[in-house]
Length: 130
Image (cartoon, rainbow, N blue to C red):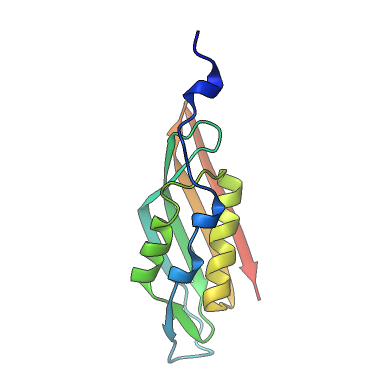
């Protein structure tokens, strides 16, 4: 008989999350409030219980302070999660922490909506206010 632990696929730890990939550019209108929406449905990480892939849509809405997030670097950052075993609740907080660290926004909301698995739809949201 195959035991549950025999079904675990190998995955990487949190140390593979590469916040150093993130880059910014100067925002030329400091004090001018705008909300930027960045959205991609290409987020992939793996379940730390089974090692099976989790797919999701990441939405970031933020009010820039002095810098904006450079989108190519954000895509590379998200790719660093591809083989990381991480729970939804942890992934959302790591993403928010890294984006706030790199861009120092006035406000930021990160939303991570996972593709349903086993009939369950999961949405995680984390918020930051300066």
